Amino acid sequence: MSTPSHAAATAPRRRNETVIVFALSLAAMVVSMMQTLPVPILGLIRTDLGTSTAGVSWVTTATLLSAAVFTPLLGRFGDQHGKKPTLVAVLGVMVAGSVIAALATSLPLLILGRVLQGAATAIFPLALSVLREEVRPQKLPGAMALVSGTLAFGSGLALVATGLLTSGSDADYRDAFWMATGFAVLALLAVALLVPAPRHKTGGRTDFLGALTLGTALLLLLLPISQGHEWGWASPRTLGGFAGAAVMTAVWVLVERKVDEPLVDMRMFVHRPVLMANLAGILVGFGMFANFLGVSYLVQMPEALTGYGFDASILRASVQFLLPGAIISLLASPLGGRLVSRRGPRAALGLAAVLGAVGFAWLALDHRHSASVIGAGLVVGAAVSFGYAAMPAVIMASVPHHQSGIANGINSISRSTGSAIGSAVVTTILASRTLDHLPPGVPPLPAESGFTLTFGIGAAAFALVAVISRFGLRGGHTTVAAAEPAAADHSGRPTDKAVRTDTADAAV
Image (cartoon, rainbow, N blue to C red):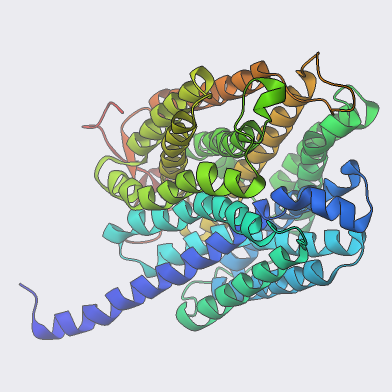
């Protein structure tokens, strides 16, 4: 039985935990909004700035590439020099980027704003590191799941909010970026006022050479992935980018094995739970974007010309078909946290795999009824939320305290990479499968088989997540060991104490 003094001491801490989780969840939601914000308004931007389709695609690509470069670097920087100062600085950069994007009168200025917005993706791994320090062990899985769940919710919310702001005949795409500025300022104030100063700093020198080589490798990988449908998948630029990525990855590994304080410890990077979490991140990120883009394009198809679709406007597509899944993602995140706490992240990842495969299979088999499209979207939304709840828990239980920022940063990049692949795959499939008999003057429209194939690939992606949860994390479920920093040897490699397993739970 707790004494009055003990209750008085723990009550403020519980209130502090609540406000910390709220502030970090808000920051993570705002960051995820930045990623999908311009998707519904690319046509307006192209018309207003007088640019080409290839040019306006850089509005989304720039954010992805910026995130790839800055997330691992800032995640490690926060571990070394303080997470709150890094969070506040990154949010300040996001505010500046949002203002520049809202005021931009040319494509280069808009792209600059988007680059600064993309740098804020580092908020997510930093937020998880703060949670590891400030939240009690028994509450940590739920807190991480809630912050993770805001990622999918924020992505969907941005689509809906942008659709609402630009639904009129005199729509101005800049309104969406002013909205982003307001959210960014709100997140900055919440973190500055509600998140405590850091208690742990590892110090040391920042591995800028490792950051440079890793960033270059990611740029060379993600650039052809995101632009391949414009350049041509067999073009010299695309193939050269992939070849350059392979070379720079080898250079990065050599650099990290030579420096005294590497950005990424290679043994941590290939530690099986961490590696499996990153592979799952690619697949879940792929599934989330395949769902967003596939459903958005599907419901906007003119049924009179194609024989399928719902003739939906951008606003209707966002509110009726995408928003329910985003809301479910947020509501499901506490359930994912409870599942991680009671059964471990392996069980949560297995459930995510089953739900995702079922949801996409449902879409592939029946996408001609609005109830089916919405219902399947709800199932996929829950799957993404459970997957996002599981991956940080695997990471946190598998790496030492001083590597949690960089480890979650790499996992964040894996999800962004999966999203880029999902966008590229959906775009390529729909562009390659078009209807033959359309009236003169009508632009090419995708055949229904393109959507069926897209959703079938989404189901296969989540089936692979099931394989990872069943065999990649085999040996029992991993639980978050957050009562004290995970143990590590002198090299920073996680020791056996960093990963605890419960062999009683052998099945997902």
